[in-house]
Image (cartoon, rainbow over the protein chains, first blue to last red):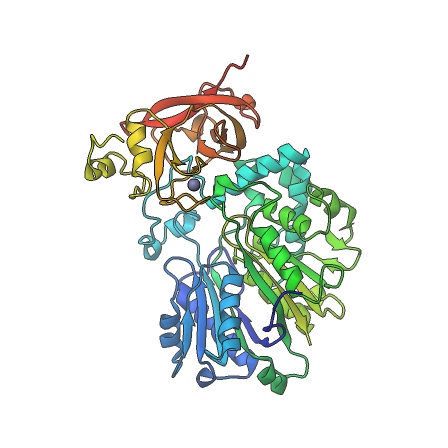
Length: 389
Length: 149
Ligand SMILES: [Zn+2]
């Protein structure tokens, strides 16, 4: 067992979300982040003066922690930080800050907005025109988004994987989104729809890539000791880790069998009392379908190259989605593919919702632990295990 | 290393790329149509993209070394839409992007496009060799299918 003194010591006591859409109208990213934050603080039963830490991640043009503190009128903050925008980076910073005593009660927010380079309608919004990527990348630039398509080609080559393997990930997410009022994409999706969707970065098509949205998620975290005064069974972070291998440049990864996800899995497994046979709900990140196939395999649900077959074998035809061993759903909120491109905060929020028993028609009976594999292969692989005490 | 063109002129010539002190040798090589990959003087390992030290032994004694340009396709993408470039017309068909595993060292890869190759032949395992095209008035390294004996 690896050293993990933070195990179960920090709790998530408040959640808030704006929900997600292709266009939140005339509202700024900061306005959405404020709405989600106020919901989360009120959900915890706290007020502004209870918050002494603030950690957040936003798209370009989104609010920084100090701007959020100013907007929310937080009287005094002793820890603030803005980690890279994939959810578990910020989660790890938040729990470390609380556990170390840097702060006691922390607001964790994530703000998303469509940008001129990923949304035609955003490009037409005069207030978003100044958001720039700087130098335009070359078509041949191995940047992370294109690189997932490249490694998908390798996956297909090495495992002789049919497109349906990727399609099942998309269908699974869409079925979940249909049961989630916060989700952006709820129209039913069939395998034929998937197979006929427009190719963007072949072998990946439009439905293999998450959907840019406007919206925000927020969480309030505090010590488990304080959380127990609010509720007898708080949701706590049992283990969390990020992972990186040395050769993490997108096109230089050692192989599909050695990258950041493997480091995360080994680290989480060594830190956790719980593993895949114990968890009640599973959140493999789905910013690209290839990432989800990777998480399913790398957590050990099946052998490398077997994720598509695994989804098929565990498919619940009636529900239109996978249900592992008839018991464990995958991204029941619709994931990044269909709830919206939340870079993992949606996965984290749904984990809390499920563990609190508040997921309505999506609820997993008596869910007591959740496994999250967040981010992709290169430099944002990360994971967490949450449980209800 | 050629220093025939100074840093300011180099940046000007490749205004579409972010160049820094660690990568300037790579792009100076392009101007001479030579593909230069960083090689460690102490342990002889190559690495790419260029770093200030050798990731294998931490030596800062590195030589940008001309490679043969021979390799095989390791990863492929067909871009049906994407960033613009003067020689790329997505309306005419998808633009291939390939990561080539160079013959000098296992898992040493260089990403570019492939020319003179029907799209159906752009596949993992295809032997290729280096070629040069013009992009924005400067040489740009690409690959084309290679005859193998
Ligand atoms: Zn060396």
